[in-house]
Image (tube, rainbow, N blue to C red; front, side, top):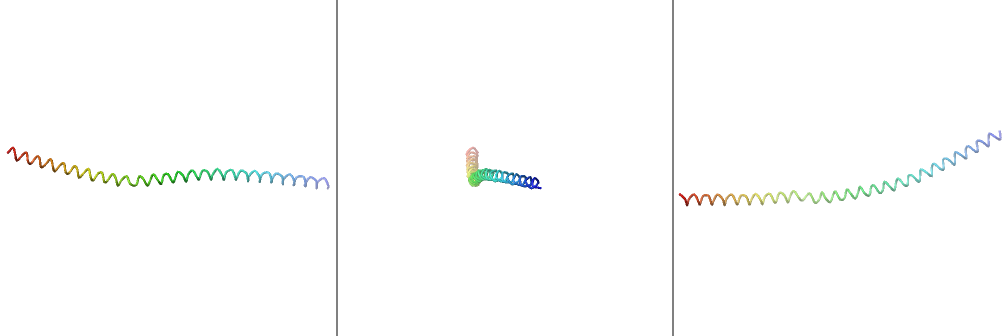
Length: 95
């Protein structure tokens, strides 16, 4: 009976030690993973901010392109009118 009681005490102490070691290991592992994931999140947030800045810069480009396109069309129309005036003038002169 005493031998069985000693074995149960030994087994329970061993199991308690094993649970304590596993708990400490898991706590340390959790803290390490938490730090790594926090660093990853910081990197992702930084990438998101840079993408937002790039997006804001690119939002203005279509407006600039439209403005350039309108000015180009106006210049082309001016040139067409000038060419038609010259053509009409020359046709009137040579008649």
